[in-house]
Length: 349
Image 1: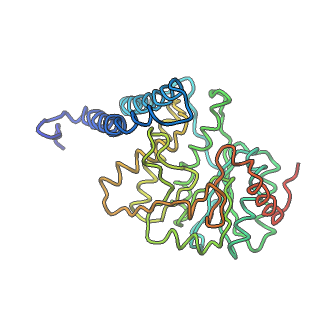
Image 2 (image 1 turned 60 degrees about the vertical axis):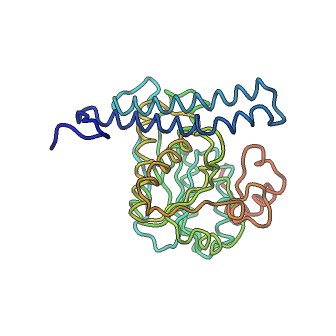
């Protein structure tokens, strides 16, 4: 094996090649995300209504800082992947049963902690029951209590028209401040999704557990046809943490998409083990890995999902209702959620 590798016209020692490669990619990312759109966002900064100049400046300064900080972390973690900070999290083992090769055209996957599952789990599963004859669902719980596990066990054995499997983990999140613990949940789910797809060999749609399927699943599967990966993109937005909605991610069980998900899961794992549980870490890593992977692998088939599939406004045209922020209190969404909740048993208090 050669001691050096070529990078352009230069010969780089093998021991330093990874560092130089990551540094070059990080500089390229910074250039693409900050310098190229600077003219457009300077215009928005000056003329976008509804915010004071101080608020606008603060917002864009935070976005630029996030890009620089993320690029620096990539280099740091590649230099010392075993370095653990005081807030590092030891990744726990997964418990429960994951189905092996389920006979299903689409496996729905959602993850939540016990509080979020108590609030939204029934309506999520009920919406699937209402729009697919025998839906296949896998639920992953973070730090569950006994009542959630008993409920899922009861539901899995008593509902003949539901293929339900579930798993859980008990993570020690004491090193993290309480406001940051939710970041572990929504980032770590993609690590568990990678494990789920490799074990089941099924096409998988990862959804936020507060979403609702409001049209027949056949329409959803038709929308996901002829692609390896699909999500709701927002590429025109400024800031690496707002380029997509991570609450809906579809991946087909195919070599390229499985490889991409593995890269996403590996990077998220390294960030969490290194104590860097960033805000919107899942969105940042998915976007970063997707852009770099799709440039290298032209055969990866990507389909952007729009409001006709992922409906953030709760209209009659969408297939999946996707609540964001204050829209979770929307009266139309709440009425629909209560109606779907009646299709599943109550969770014991």
